[in-house]
Amino acid sequence: MKIEAIQTYILRSPLDKPFYSSQARFTDRNSLLVRICTDDGIVGWGEGGQYGPPEPVACCINDVLAPRLINTPADTPNRTFEELYAFSRDFGQKGTYIEALSAIDIALWDIMGKSLGRPVHALLGGAFRNQVKAYGTGCYYPDFFADTPKMLAALESEAQQLKESGLRAVKIKIGLLPIEIDGQRVDLVRQIFGSDFPLMIDANHAYNATSATRMGRRVESNEILWFEEPVTPEDHAGYQQVRRSLNIPIAGGECEFTRYGFRDLIEDCVDIVQLDLCCAGGFTEWQKISALASIFSKPVLPHVWGSGIAVAAALQAIATAPPCPHTAYPVALQNEPMIEFDRTPNPIRDDLLQQPFRLENGYLAVPAGPGLGVEIDEAVLQRLTVSH
Image 1 (cartoon, rainbow, N blue to C red):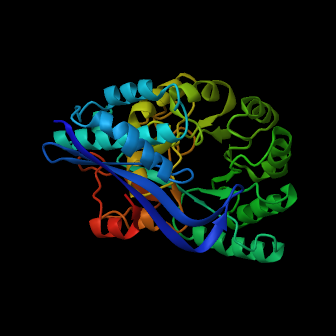
Image 2 (cartoon, helix red, strand yellow):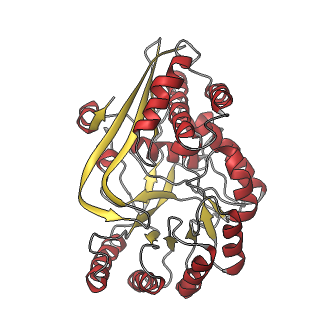
């Protein structure tokens, strides 16, 4: 079984209501899919290109990596990743090239699962669970974020909707506004959900260590389960300073790449490891990064931001994660993993698959079919594709 053809799809869907994180205004949702076909007719899907424009990732695949893969074995994803990483190491240890390798890796695991008639989680060693509790990411900033009363009223309405949606935990955005106003946002959401509901905050690396510490102390009384990306990804010393200064667990890793990048982050900087399979190296690197995290008894809770392929890949990986550490009755967000289920509008997630993911009693089911266990709706794919 050899690789016969590789095709990329740049997906983009405009949003009716743009929103902000601390870093940017989002006017659309975009990503990049790769389709790999074998000489015996099997098709595998992967995803990358979620951070910034997907076009550079498509160029990496189409112009550099794909020519090296044609007529090579399609059922050796680990070997393929290692050989492609070795080839691109001198100029692509992070960022665009690793996103491209991630998409290829996920597609090859999808192919291998389909060729054997088994889901990816079986190939990775077996599942600990067939469904995963979901936490919702929401409460971004509206275009009118500078109008504090209006912004807080919109936040209250959104938080109430999230509360009624059946989610088991919620993560909200901070970092765009002054610390006191963002503190009011956290206070409001905590009031709506009540004292016992799991609540997390995500700054998208908006602060330096001093400001992050101030923000953390401002909201500590709200029983925050984790403070995500308090400082910039490169600032390991800042991570360490914030972690020493607060009683809130620190999470991060969505902007890190491969096991090499995660080594120091896991040991000294974070309590919760948040690699993104579509950016950090696919299933091949998931196994290695998870093994590193297990040495320090740190849970791996993947970051998920993309299409239905990204959700499927994360579910397949999370299914294989043991309780960390083991107990006879694992508890979600204590030693049992959860999956991130972004609640902003996202047609490339909600419309792309023939059977979209749906929350059931706060859970997402792990796909049980071969490979990733999902199928693309070709008509929707063509509608969302802006470039090949």
